[in-house]
Image (cartoon, rainbow, N blue to C red; front, side):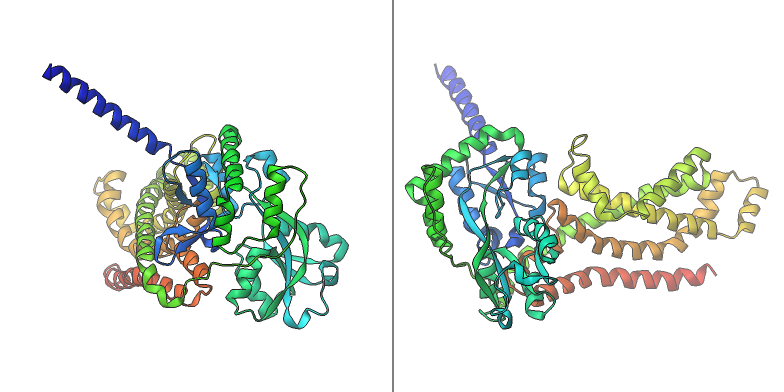
Length: 499
């Protein structure tokens, strides 16, 4: 009996463990862009390794309604949310995602859970002259790219003569407006009011009339329509029981238009209001810079690890390319030359997108691995030219002397050519590594949170690039200056020996 009881206990324990693992695997993984800042998603000033915002709380409410584990956040650039859900990086995209016909065609989109207004911001001195888009003929109007506001400006360009200016973030448009580089900014009223508060309610005003009405939604992959329907049911329940209203009130973005939206969702046909809301989440003060140091240190570690691994790959592939170009048969020389010219002649950013998104249908690489491959293969082309130049710099009489002594080409390469070429190549290789270290900042576009991306998130929170930029520069200098000094020492030491 004891043996049977032990066996049953063991089986129950295994079953319980499997059930626990299953529950954890069902956790709702959602993606958003913390660089967008409050009140949507921002790094928590008290603990920058976590996020807060009304979309964070909406995700948690959805996870609870679905009876999933805690919602788990994945950082992704805002403009890449749609592509990332289709790749399967996460199940749900939430971060002020706008409801558009194109998005509904390509993806599974939830019901609207928040209504926003597209509003114009103009300099205080211009508020009496500019009342709407028609008064901006021939003027520069900034906004975020890939948004309803940007499409609105493009459609109005022919009729009004507006000059649309696209930005990758929602901080610089208002800074350029105050500085006189723009004549107006068109963006969501939530973003506009946050920017006004960040500027101390000075420098520009928000015009009361709405240029357009839009809604925030959650976006899922087209194949996840069943999950979308379940999320819609949770959102409807959150509207009924008041929990969604409580979230918006906590973040001070609730207004009459949200109540009207809820009525339309729950009882189609109800009307709505347009009372303006307020931005509630205040950016973290620069004095809290110390709280961000651990996050910046972790991001710097990601940058270093990615750079070292990418450089190792670049060295290996570069050696193969240089050897093939110098010693290979004609077809191999043509291939290696073509590869080198193609990679050096196209932007690294384009190569990142092709490897991460373009090849997703063939091979779905994790973001970090895709970044490693893209950086490694890109710099391999440059390394190959360094090695080829170094090998060809070895004096020909030395090579002829080796052949006279009866050495094979392989022996000449190993004993005569390679050791001297290494001296020529070492300093340029070190310089290339410093360049790669800085180019690694580009990988944030494919969801890798490295040092520059973490700094951008921090800068959005505090509303200034001064302190975050200085911290980021100090960290980069601390990583790159020793390498630069090493390169100069190698040039002095080995340059003298090889002369």
